[in-house]
Length: 176
Image (cartoon, rainbow, N blue to C red; front, side):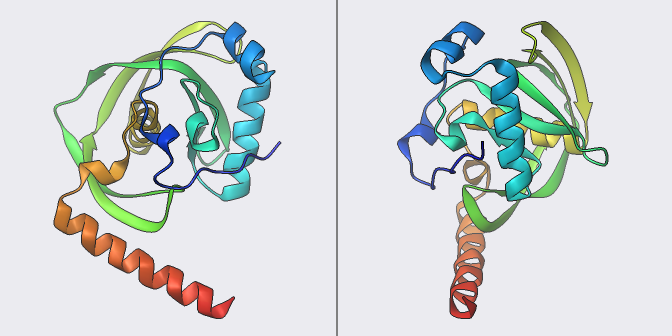
């Protein structure tokens, strides 16, 4: 199943989500963890992104999927993830988000992280990422915290980025 994405400003995107059990997901959404993973992964592939939080699709559970190996398109479901450590070393990278089409902002994030999560089989796991995978994880994690990448940019950078995004959307609408 391919989910419809919520638009920026949707109240569901600004709510910090509580931990969710596999049983709650089954009861409230009639989905197993594997089905949730497959549906989110299918939506992620259909939209061409590299990570997707369940709440971006209107499913208010503390879960997201991302490519843990982009070259091989390996997808992992992270249920109830917790960042347990962040490096002091940071890097800056241009980030975008499906919620904000054509908006790209230079965002500073920790270069490396360690975390825990529940996998698609219901097992508790530990992991660590550095570089791009750490960035994707943090971006999707922010969604579950009710935050988004626009809140990590200066007001001026956000305004400039929004202006560029509006121009791009206007140009695309003229062609369509």
